[in-house]
Each structure stands twice: as structure tokens, then as C-alpha cells.
Image (cartoon, rainbow, N blue to C red; front, side):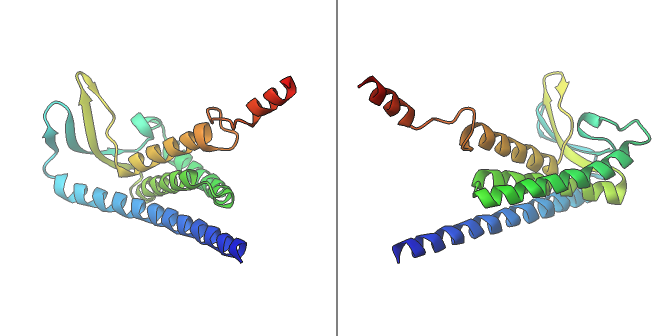
Length: 190
């Protein structure tokens, strides 16, 4: 009886994590689109707003390329992203299903954020042929490329996936190994 209850609880927890992951995905797309609409309406006339002088600004920009404007100056850039994005989304979904089956919570959350960020920018590409960016940081003379909430979700999601793969996965590079290896060595010595 105890084992059955624990199995049900594990299954329920797994589905709760799944539901939270889907909520994260949907909310990241929703907030990304709402912030872009808000900044387009608010800043289309006002230009740049200083939040912290010499460091943090809101600056509405349009990017027809990828991060740092990569491929923005080539005629085939938009077609490239319109083809590549669905392929990337399909791969993210396949990895999400795998992570769900393995019950990898951090990876599921990371993939959900990555999918949400990818969809948020893909909506812009389909609607406007470019992505709306508005968050700007300056470090001395270096102006970091302007970005948006979808970019943040995608970056944090990929970082979470990397953390899972490096530290949390069963075969992670930096995962602490159980002391079984040490015990086996001591048994051989006796």
C-alpha cells in the first residue's frame, strides 16, 4: 500500500512539474509580447529613456538579424530564421519530452524558458520581419547589444540546461560520485 501511494505521488509530482513548465513557457511568451507592445507604443515617440545614467537604458530598436545583428544585412537572413526556428523548436520539444520522462526538473524549466523565448521572437519575425528589442546596457565605452524579454528567457533557459548537463544529470561531468567507488576500493584492500 505504501509503495502504491509513493508511486502515485511521484507521478503527480512529475505532472505538476510538467504543468509548471508549460505555464512558464506560456507566461514567457505572453510577457515578452506584452512588453514589446508596451514599449512600441510608449517609446515610438520618445526614443531612449535613461534608467541608470551611464549604465541602463530603455531604447526601442528593431533587429532583422539574430543577436548582435548577425545576418541583418543579408537578403536571405529572414528566410534562414523562418526555417531554422521551427527546426530548433522541434528539437527543444523532443528534448523536453525526454527530460519529462527522466523527471529532470531543472532541464524541463530551462527548455520551457528556451521555447518561450524562441516563440516570442519568432512571433515578431513572422509579424514584422524583425524583432523588437528595448533593454540596453552600457559598460564604459562598450554598448551591449539591445535585447528583449524573449532573449532573457532563451539565455536563462539555455544556462539552466547547461547547469543540468554539467552538474545534475546522472552522467554529469562535475557531479559528485557516490562513495561506492571508495568503498569498493577499501574492500579490495582488505
